[in-house]
Image (cartoon, rainbow, N blue to C red):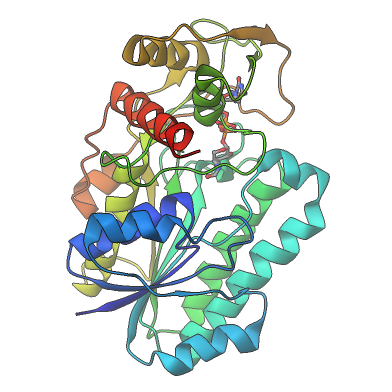
Length: 341
Ligand code: WQD
């Protein structure tokens, strides 16, 4: 079995990707310092896949500790690098913490990949690299606009670091995956997103308000030039995102890559407004959401959604979950969290 190292394996997308990788025949090890995640998520992963995934509780900013993982595992075929801080608002308050963490961890994992001759590297990027695009949907060739936050800057810089590193290491091939808005939870209800503190992202804010953990949520801005005045996003189920990583690794392992660092948008290709997303949630949950309208959130992109034809044609990726599925699984997960309390 080919062994894959997943960094940030106890995180939201990382844990769902581990499930998909194992169910598609890969052996997986995880590295996650659990500073922003819970090791307990691997219990749910174990229930789904029937085996325990080993996690190395290591801070990737510590090179020696990171290197030790590779000294213990000489048979790593590929790396999927998720580990990073990802809160847009926090990155505005603490930019240097984001640059330090997100870039030094990436540099260390790339140094180890080169030293230990790991041939395949998948980098977790984001639609945030496009900034506020002039036209939508965005393709992989849409030029970057200035990032709206230090978080977005770390993804733009991260892509550049991977591309230029790979150019110097001919034995390594990479893929950059640009996620749009990952939402929802595994249909088993055994794993999902565990936001730390008050959720900044829309769907956890919706479900926590509906379950009563939050008294009310606010819609940030209803005066944008969109269908109903609220922002447009391309919400994509986390399991569709996870499966794209399995397909991306197979694309590299089978040598189908066209360049040494191919880029793919991971979105449904549909844009929904915030108010439309809330309406779908109310329909699938049967709950009336307590929300109010507020001013615009600084740094918000007005509208963005993906042209996903390249991932469909080259990776064979075919996202299958609808927005209703996303809301239904997110709500089921929130109800499970409440029952487990
Ligand atoms: C979506 C829309 C908000 C909360 C960011 C990153 C992206 C990814 C996901 C990591 C916006 C509105 C939200 C609320 C609201 N990060 N909203 N009330 O900002 O599009 O993307 O998070 O993977 O890389 O850029 O996601 O869910 O925060 O916001 O009205 O309580 O929901 O204003 O229009 P965003 P989001």
